[in-house]
Picture 1 (cartoon, helix red, strand yellow):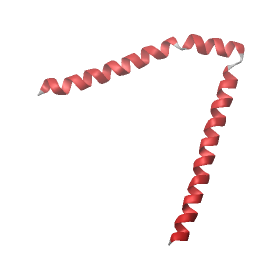
Picture 2 (picture 1 turned 60 degrees about the vertical axis):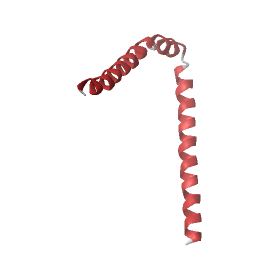
Picture 3 (picture 1 turned 180 degrees about the horizontal axis):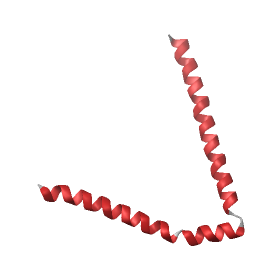
Picture 4 (picture 1 turned 180 degrees about the vertical axis):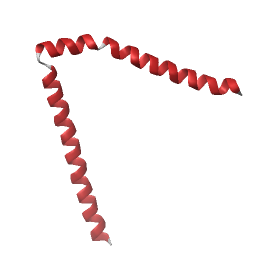
Length: 72
């Protein structure tokens, strides 16, 4: 029984360790993008997409709320 509990815990620890190791390799790419000024383009695109998604969800929520009120 104890072995069954240790295996998922070990797998979870290995997953976290591999994620942390993978993040260390990306600093070279981030440094290169910062030095070229491209990081600001990436951040701007990400913010645009995020804002677009938030606006879409808010608009969809309003439409659904309106439909729910009409059906009552």
